[in-house]
Length: 165
Image (cartoon, rainbow, N blue to C red; front, side):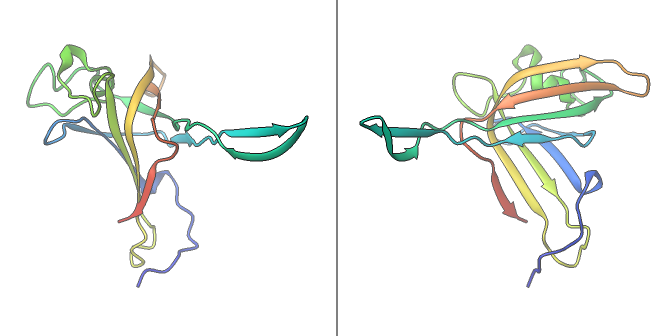
């Protein structure tokens, strides 16, 4: 039976995979720099009665936000040569409409972040699934030691799904 671990997890324990919506998803495993971030927001409606708060209730759903930085080695690979692996840039930007959206209407992707338990005997690996992420922004930059892509997007549900794997 798995037990909760007290060993902190860090960049060496994570793996980020981006998947499109095709039947057998095309995917890209990302070389992250370790700053994956997401935010979950709840809204509240205050119901007033004669100038005072009578009660509160949960308001409209606000989708999660997600961001990460990744090193890029090749901007276009799979779409230029079918034998190459999928690059981060091309799955996020979808040049030539090679990839399939996970949702109708807007180009969206599924993003999965798996965090391995450093104590491999516990079986406490976790998978964080961000479904139907709309790509809001892709920033590309060159750097002294590596070129980077900064990504930000938004989901339509309040929080990702977290499971033990």
